[in-house]
Length: 146
Image 1: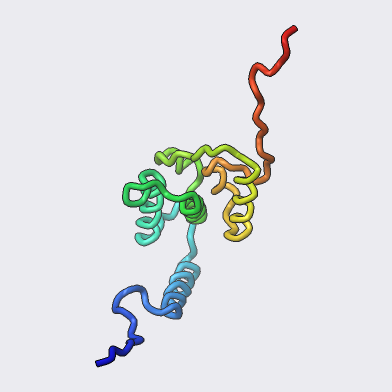
Image 2: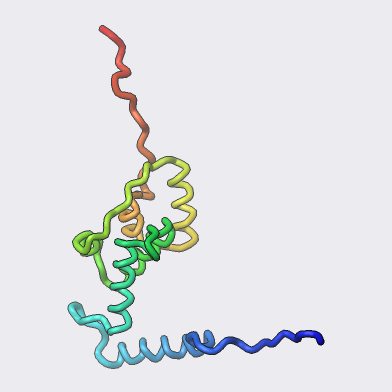
């Protein structure tokens, strides 16, 4: 007896893309018409839980493993977009990474920036300044004898 494939989607999840778009638009409409977001207003419960999860993952990693570089920058960028600052992230225990700025690393980071459009501050937590040129290594004690 031959098996046939079913096109039925598994139950659960968040629904279709249209349903997600409708909920997002409804939340934005409610926010705008209810006076909008004021500085100092608390985040809604969903956003606050997301903020806490992102900060925890930045500090501890995911499932005991450190975040990959792109996940790290994405998390920092998302937190910056919901109102966090670099100083507040540092106060919460998020440590900036300090890779060596090689020309190859900067080229790859610039390509990722072009593709994703992150905020410049997100790269600062990664220890990179995309506008700067890589530092050249200097050799100590390379001066000749006198």
